[in-house]
Image (cartoon, rainbow, N blue to C red; front, side):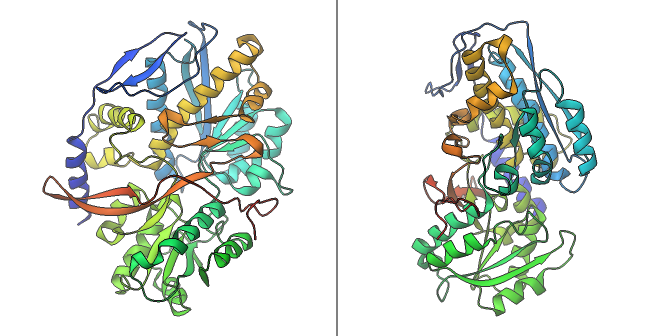
Length: 452
């Protein structure tokens, strides 16, 4: 079944193609245009840096527990850097990348920070994981190095006292995601046809990531939205069976299962619900990571109907100009060179999509900073000054950032769902938005504006 689903997805993708026309110069530049001349706005450069190079630094776990999600992240950075150079680089300067593999070791993360952050051109460093962000938060502040991060925790972004640092996350805080989900459920619960009032049970990975949504502030917010609470059950990512955890919260009244886990986690929960015959009694849901091709590939048809947060424009929204650019790069650099279509699909996921677009965000921030202080005066402190007043929609809105007024994470999203649809005679899994973009509540433990 899993193989058939992957083949159907490949067939659907192969039916999609794009052609691009580029108009390049370091002074004025438009993004790739489709037949209908759609573009997105970028800041024009005031200096010509042709002949210079700018390094994009990043590091994280590429061979340990999170390799399945971080390796596509690097693939997105690689193809994103190639795209930037094809469209003028950063004011004419060529973008190169340099990265390291921590293997999940905090000691290695510290060693790579010590090595890279002292370089004169290390104005920013991109990190993959919240744990590394928490480790390096205070050091980054002291050294005035901007950190961009794929999944920033509240502690990494705001510290213990709630003070915004110089770390900027490209997805929303998980507690904020839960609050936004509860708002949606409060208004739309009847549409799911499940008996009783909505009652949520958390079934997630054990650890800081898995337990990050289930905060006192988020529970209070959901309770105020009249979404009940049936407790939480946590398990190790290597656990072969989660039926005990699922049944425990269901026995306690849960008709919503909310998970903060990745890839195998949501797939395992969806499979358990199917096996136990609970599909008509509970809604499987979670943070942004549940809506991913990795989940579909591992969980198959059991993932149909899963609902979660969608804080970016997804691959299946083919009309979007940014999606068209990313999909074309993926097709040429990944699908056409892969040993099998399945290998190419392994990187057609959240990580590739968002990291690719993050390069455009980084480029925009660098251009604004260079315009403000000049190439010769570029520094981490100057870049951070830009970021504190920075709002932008990378690649025309793959995701949306607004770091003004002390915000350090994405604060807007949509609700989306995994849906299996008929496309050209094939039953094809897709991820579809259920709502328009909306502002997420601010549920930071310290200083959250929307904490009840």
